[in-house]
Amino acid sequence: MSSAIAPKPPARRGRLSLYLDLVRWDRPAGWLLLLWPTLGALWFAAGGFPGWHLLAVFVLGTILMRSAGCCVNDVADRDFDRHVKRTAQRPVTSGAVSTREALALGTVLALAAFGLVLTTNRPTVAWSFGALAITLAYPFAKRVVSMPQAVLGIAFSMGIPMAFSAVRDGAVPMLAAWLLLGNLGWVLAYDTEYAMVDRDDDLRIGIKTSAITLGRFDVAVVMACYMLFLAVWGWAGFAAGLGWPFALGLVAAAGQALWHWTLIRHRTREGCFRAFWHNHWLGFAVFAGVVGGNALRA
Image 1 (cartoon, rainbow, N blue to C red):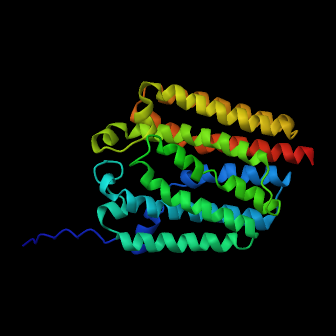
Image 2 (tube, rainbow, N blue to C red; image 1 turned 90 degrees about the horizontal axis):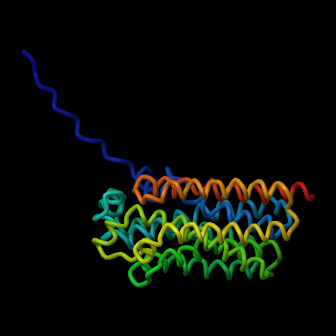
Image 3 (spheres, helix red, strand yellow; image 1 turned 90 degrees about the vertical axis):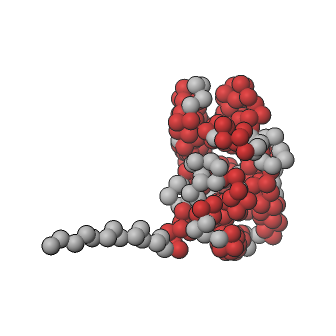
């Protein structure tokens, strides 16, 4: 006599696993996009290796703040995300993690990052409050701003003036503003690619994005933003005398930007998402050129 074996119910996921999903731990591309320009600014500010203390502060701080930003973003977007296939199963949207839990986790992560900043100097601590304010404002910008990617661009660039301030005892030269402007162009490029993935869903639910605002000019503007980034950082690197290693990194980054054009020109979801996902390699190429140029000059 045979007996049927009842299927086991799906195992409940542990809180740690859910929290790691919430902060996108399995998708490091997000914090790498923040990390490379921040570290590049550190090397520019120090004229070479900035020291292990500042390197640790900015690497760990970048990871912590990006993770905190994910918590806030998912709470703010929970009612929108459930209508988008790609985001419907995020922990907050699906109800696996409560909004209170997500905000508590985000607060802990932000406080940990603030603790790192406290080991630098007062001006850098002051800059961190501005960075936090912009990080908190970004998730709500897409409700009122036609190009919320510009707000994200500022949030993702705040590590640049903070790096100069930390290295130079509070002094933030005009070079930092130029590097921030160039990095803003890069963020606009890759986050518009990201917005192109969800354009149809965003139109349906009423979210404002650069992909919608730019319409048929989206690809042209993305490429122009890449050019702005490479031109400004290229000018800064050559003005600093970084030489052929920096030129090599810049050429590698430009080659990747051209490859991204082949991925996004037909505006397919797969192509646009692939271009966005690989942008951290473009940023790494520029950063590697900055490091190599400073090492050769030393």
